Image (cartoon, rainbow, N blue to C red):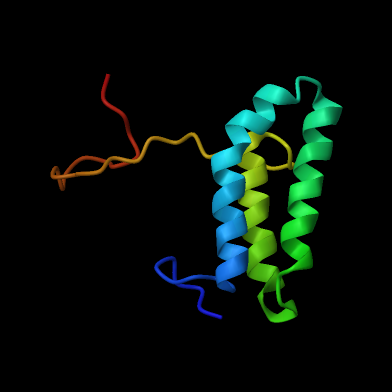
Length: 100
């Protein structure tokens, strides 16, 4: 297993299922209008992916699924909403301080 973001974290099958999950989440959220229905739909997909994940790859895949779940509001965790500047040229200014 390779933890680099430029390489697959697991098998081709698992990677395909994760890509499908990410593509299907807008529709899953739209079709499941109650919190419980959405949570159930998420859990089914989550468990199906973990069922085909090799044991050695499970920690990385669980972490990825957790991040996806946080993004869609079906897993506990904080979303990152901080602004990160793409280009920062002023070496004297504090990069964390926002100008008004």
